[in-house]
Length: 251
Image (cartoon, rainbow, N blue to C red):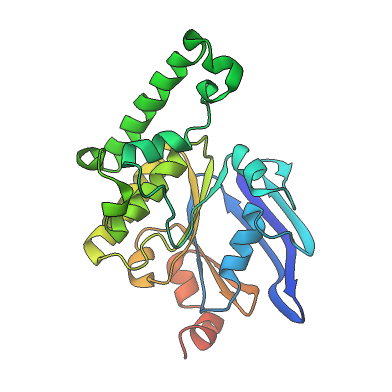
């Protein structure tokens, strides 16, 4: 079953067609990769899907609902969560506090409910329990009290993913989840992604340039060149596609 359908989406900047009539279908509970050289339209496509850009043409259907042109916060509330190439947590807060800040059900933050402890205490306990589960899943328990500003680049990537997991995510869009991360941790991050897909049935769609690592862990690959999807299929099929070899890998 498809969780995301992109139909004839186009995004133009002046005379430049950054995304040119793109159509893709993403199956639920799969790990998907968009590959392509710089300037091929990958990030622009993710921005259209997640609501940061409004497509000039086409439609985006997520979980059976048309979310075309909806603002990012509304799309996120529907369960489509976006992370970014450069993580931007609350650097002065601890990892645990960053996770709790991402939790979506905090009645104690509302003025009326804040006056009545019994109305929000249970939710606060649920938030802490969920945060502890996420810390355990991503092997960050020992860093729970560490301020985010003291984390390495790879640990920040994990924190970004953890904050996404604190929401009601059905699908997560990842922008270079292992960019600038050492190979050992890069492999571990992809193993976490596979575990999350299997245990929590979350779908992933990502951009990643480190194909030597990513191709070992993804189910489906979309090759994007010049704003268009030129090939979609299993990793080996895409890597051996003649147009991909000629246009992306340099022949």
